[in-house]
Length: 608
Ligand code: G6P
Image (cartoon, rainbow, N blue to C red; front, side, top):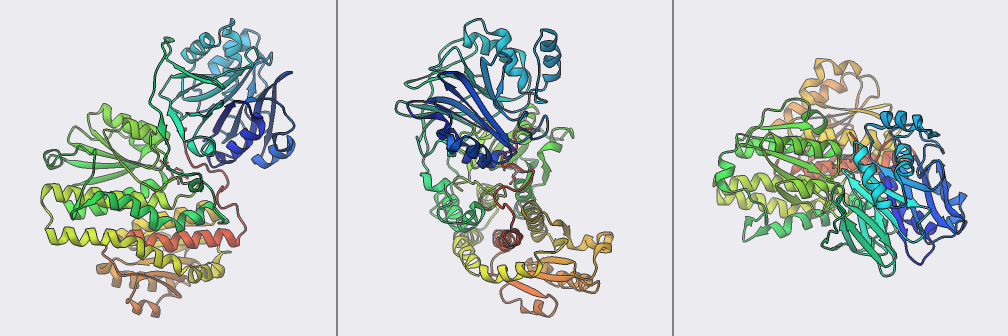
C-alpha cells in the first residue's frame, strides 16, 4: 500500500523520484506526487491517476530543478483518489512536505486539535495532520519536531519529510510500515522497497520501528527517539537489476509465471542434502515437533490458499491437526493456541498488516511462530521465531504466481521435515517425495511450453460472465487460487467450490454456457469428479478439465482437457496451478486489461 521514495545527492531529484516510483507502482496507483527542494523553496506536484500522468505534467521531472526530494504513489485509504488527497502534503506555511504510508488512527482527534490551533485542512487524508503537526512543533530543530510528532500520532507510518529551512538534508522514520535506506556514493535514498533504488545501489539498511534517519548526500545518520545514534549492518541485496525488470516480456505476471521452474529449484535445491531435508537456521527439534498439538496456518490472499494446501499435506503426512485461517480473522477469533501450537505465517512481502498482527497475537499467546517469507529483512522475517525463505526473487505483478508456487514447495518441505525428524516416514517414501520435489521445475517448464493450448481455450471464454472452479481436497485448495487469479486480473465473477458441495445450493447458478473449470487430478477422487462434471454439464455448463496425463476417459465428459504430467498427489498442486495462472493471464490479456496493476488492488497490503 503506497510507495515512498526519497533522494538527496548531486543529480536532479525529480527524474530520479519518477523512476523510483515507477518501480513501486505495484504498491498503489491511484495517484502520485513529488516534492522537490528548489531555489524557490519546496515545490510540490501531484496528480490523480497513474504515474504517467504526473510524469507528463512535469516533463519527466525536467520541469522541477533541485537535487533533493520525496515522492509517493498512493493506494487510497482516507479520501478518494484526487489531486488534493495525493501526497506529498504541505503544512499551511509550505515549510514542510510529507509523504506517508500507513494509517494514522487518531487523525480525527488530531485534526480537531490542530483546527482549534488555527490550522486549515484542505484534504480528507489522515496524512495532512502530520504536515501540520511538524509545523506546530517545529522550533528550529527538525529532530525535536519529529520526536514530538511520533509521540503524538497513533497507528502505522513510513514518513519522508522535507523542511524548507534545510536545503541539504531530509528526515524519515518508520513504524509498522516498511522503509529502507539506500546508500550511494555522494547520494542517499529512502524507499518502501528495494526495486525502487536497486539500479542505484545494492547497499541498504532496514529501519526498525521508530528509528529516525537524517539523510545528506554524504551522510546517513540513524538515531532513536532518545537521540542516541544507532549503528546498523549494511545489507547487500543479492539480486541484480534484471530480476526486477520486465526483460522483454509484455507483463511482469507472464515473466513471473515463466520464472517458476527456476524459483522452485532455488527454493528446494539448497535444502536437500544427502537425501534429507535440511532447513538451516530452523530451530524446530524433534522433541518440539513431537509435542505439537496443532499447526495453525495464518495468511492472506494467495498465501492463505497455500495454507489450505498445507492443511491437506501436513494432516495426511503427519496426522497433526492443522487449522488454516485468514489473518484478519485470526486476531479477533480468540484462537485456541498455546506453547504446543506452531503458528505458521505465510507472506510474500512479509509486510501484510494483518499477518504481522496475527504473528504478534500468536506470540502473545505463547505459541512458536514459523514464517514462510519471500522478502528478506521484512517485518515478519525479523520477528518470527523461525524463517524459511522462499527464493522467488522480487515479484512485481500484483497477482502472485511464483511466490505462491515457492510457498507451496516450502510447505511440502516443512511437512516432510516433520516426518523426517519424527522418523515417521520410511526412507523410501522420503526419497520418493524428495525426487518429486526435484522433478517439479522440469514438469512445470513442460506445462508452460504448452501455453498455446491454454491461450486457445482462453480465447473461447474470455467474455464469460461467470466462471466456477471445482475440485476435491488438494484440487479444491488449488481451485481457490485459480478463482482468485481470474477475478483479480480479469474482473470476471468467479467462485471456487468443493465439487461435492456444489449441489447444496450453488448448482442453482449453472445454466447454458456457464464456464466450469474442473480440477480432476486427485487419483482416488477422479471418478467422483467425473460425476460432478456430468451434473454441471446436464445443466448446460461448459467444462474445462485439468487432469493427469493418461486419464483420457475425461475427454468423454469435458469440453476441453488440459493435461499435466503424472505426479504424486502431494506435489500435484504445484502443477495444477500453472494452467490456471496462464488461463487467467490470457483471459485478462484478451480483454485488454492492465494485468500487472489490476483495479483497486495493491500488492503489499500494509493496512488492516
Ligand atoms: C495481496 C496480493 C496477493 C497476496 C496477498 C498477501 O492481496 O495481491 O497476491 O497473496 O496480498 O500478501 P503477502 O505479501 O502477505 O503474501
